[in-house]
Amino acid sequence: MYHFDWVIFFHYLWPVSAFQDPLIRNGLITTIVVSIVAQAMGVIFGLFAALGKMSKAPVAHWLAEAYIWYFRGTPLLVQMSLLFFGFGVIHLYDFPDIHIGLITITGAIQAGTLALGINEGAYMAEIVRAGIESIDVGQMEAAKSLGMTYGLAMRRIVLPQAAKVIIPPLGNEFNNMMKTTSLMEVISASELFFAFNEINARLFKPFELFIVCSIYYLVLTTVWSIIQARIESGLGERKAMEKNPGMLSRLFAAR
Amino acid sequence: MSVTMSTTFQPNSNNNQTVIVKAERINKSFGRLHVLKDIDLTVKKNEVVVVIGPSGSGKSTLLRCINHLEKINSGHIIVNGRMIGYYERNGRLVEESERNIARQRAEIGMVFQRFNLFPHLTVFQNIIEAPMNVRRSDRSAAEADAMRLLERVGLADKRDNFPSQLSGGQQQRVAIARALAMKPNLMLFDEPTSALDPEMIGEVLDVMKELAQEMTMIVVSHEMGFARAAANRILFMDEGRILEDTTPEDLFDHPREERTKAFLSKILH
Image 1 (cartoon, rainbow over the protein chains, first blue to last red):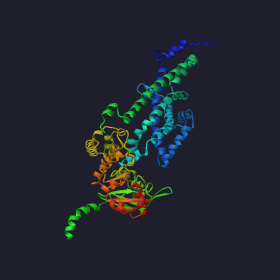
Image 2: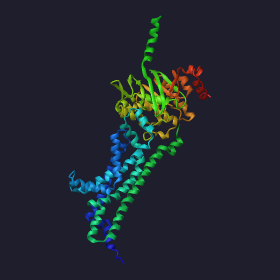
Image 3: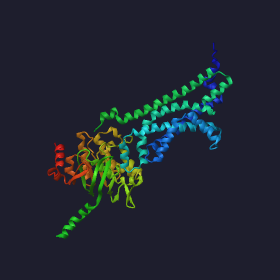
Image 4: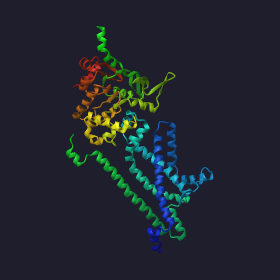
C-alpha cells in the first residue's frame, strides 16, 4: 500500500509555502509570460501568413504555404530541438542568456518561446484567414470605391470586423498554449513542469508532485476560461447592442 | 442671329461638353462568359444616365469596370480625362499601381445594391472614415461636411447609430452620404433600390433626384419613375451590348428594338 505523502502534497500545493521555492515561483511566472508572448507572436505571424496565403503575389503566397505546411506538418518538440540545439551547433544563433536588470532570460526560454510562437503562427494563420474570409466581400469593395488601398481597407475595415470572429478560437489557442509550454522542459527551459521535475529529482515523490503540477495547470486554464467567457459575452453584448436598439429607444424611436 | 444663339447657348453647352466618362470598345469576360461586347459610352458633365436591361445583360459589370472594381480585357475607359486602371507603355496597356487606382477611385462615388456600410462604425464614422484616412482632411472639416451631408439625406438624428439599427432605406441614404463625402465628380449607382422594401424606395429616389440636378450619375436601376423624372439618357443593355441610347420618353414611348419592347412590357406590367 502506497503511503501518500500529504505533507509534500500540501507544501507544494499551498502557494505561500510553494512559492518560497524560487523554482516554482519563477516557473509559474515563466509559463504565464511565455504563453502570452508566444501567443502574441503567433497572432502576428499568423496574420502575415494569412495575408500571404490570400495574396495574389506568387512569392508571398508560396512562402506562406511552405511555412504553414512545415510547421503544421512536423512535431513542435522537433522544431524546438532543432531551433535550440541545431542552431547552436551550426552557430547560426547560440541563444545566449539575456540579462535585463535582475531578470535573466535564458537561451532555452528564448528558443522555446520563439518555437512556440512560430509554430502557433501556422495554426493562427488558418484562424485569421477564416476570420477575414467570413467578412462580406462588399466591405472590401465599398472601402476600395472610397479610394482606400487594400492595406488601408484591411486595417480599417476588414480586420476590425474579422477580429470578432477570430477572438473565440484565439482564446482556445491560448488555453492550449499554456499547456504546450511544458514541452520546453526538454530543452531545460525553467518553466512550471521543469520546476516540478527538478523537485521530483530531489525528493522522488512523482505521484504527489505531478498531481500538484497538474492542479497548477488546471488553475491556469480554468482562470483563463472564465476570463475568456467574460470577453466573449462582452463581444456578444456589443453585437446585440448594434443589432437591437434598447427597449427605451425602441419605445421612443421616431422613424 | 448666330451671335445671340451662341451667347445664350455657349455657357450651357460648354458645361455639357466636358466629358467625364469615355469608354471605347471595352470587352469583359468572366472565363468563357463574354459579358461586355465592344461597349462604347460617353457621359458628359451633369448628365444622368440610367441603364436598364435584363439580369445578366452586363449593366452592373459595366458600372464596376468604370471604377476598376472589375478589370477589362480590352478597350479603355477614360474617367476625368485619365485612363482608369491602366497606363500605356510602349503601346501596351499595363495595370496601374494600387495606389494610383485608389487615387482615381477616390474621385468616383459608388452606391451598392446591398449598401455595404461598415457595420463596426457608427453612421457618422462611416461618413468621415474615407475623408480622414484617404484624403487626410482635418477632423473638424470632415465632421462639418459629414453633418451637412447627413442633414441633406435627412438623417442627422441618426449620426451615432450603428448601420444595423437603421432601416434599409436609411442605410442606403447613409451610403449615398458616405460616397458624397469624398466630393466625387461622378456617382455610380448599382441597383440602389433593388434590396429595399417597396415603402422605402421613395426616400432613396428622392435623395437621388435632388442629387441628379448637380451631379454626373450613371444609375443601373429599373425605377422608371426615376428615369423619367431625372435622367437625360437611358441605355438599354442586352447580352453585353448597348441596344438603345436615347431619352427616357423616347425609349418608353417608342422603343425601337423588339427586345426592348419585350423587356419593357415585363417590367412595366
